[in-house]
Amino acid sequence: MPASSPQLLKEYRAKRDFTKTEEPSGARAKRPGKALRFVVQKHDASRLHYDFRIELDGVLKSWAVTKGPSDNPADKRLAVRVEDHPLDYGGFEGTIPEGQYGGGTVMLWDQGTWEPIGDPHEGLEDGDLKMRLHGERMQGEWVLVHMKAATPAVAPARRAKTGSSSSTGTTMLVAASRLPSALPARFRPAVISTASPRG
Image 1 (cartoon, rainbow, N blue to C red):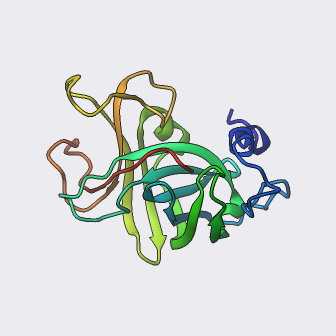
Image 2: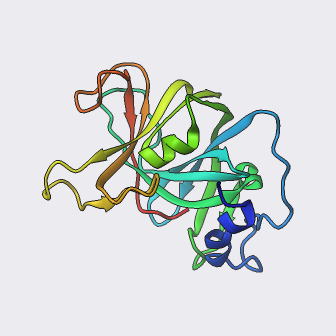
């Protein structure tokens, strides 16, 4: 059974001083709506990246994406899992003070609703989370897929953070349109990647 939202937000709260940042603490639990929400925030921190967040288990599951989502099959973008965020973070825009975790400007880039294709918890655990997005920019079917490292020479190997798998490799957010050669033929997509995990 998934942990409760207060448990899931422990890491988020531990990294922030809410007397110095205007980011929501999640202390006032925001009631989930009828439809699951997703949001993409442009985050100009130490490195510019885009935070992709989907509502699940009463929190926003989050990934940092370096150059932002792309539906071009040639554009591979790594997705680095970061800590869960409170639901009200989905409406946050502003400047996180310098010296605070993730210091920099946060702007809303896209928002909408999403539908899991299959069981989302199994998808996270297996590193193969398929979804349908209904956003202002991002539309259609996407997948967060964990790719195992082919050789030790492929980028520094990371532990899969989409679930509990101990295998190494990278996670990508993929737009389902045409199939990159590295992905299974059963799912036909285009790709998205990430940066350092700075929520």
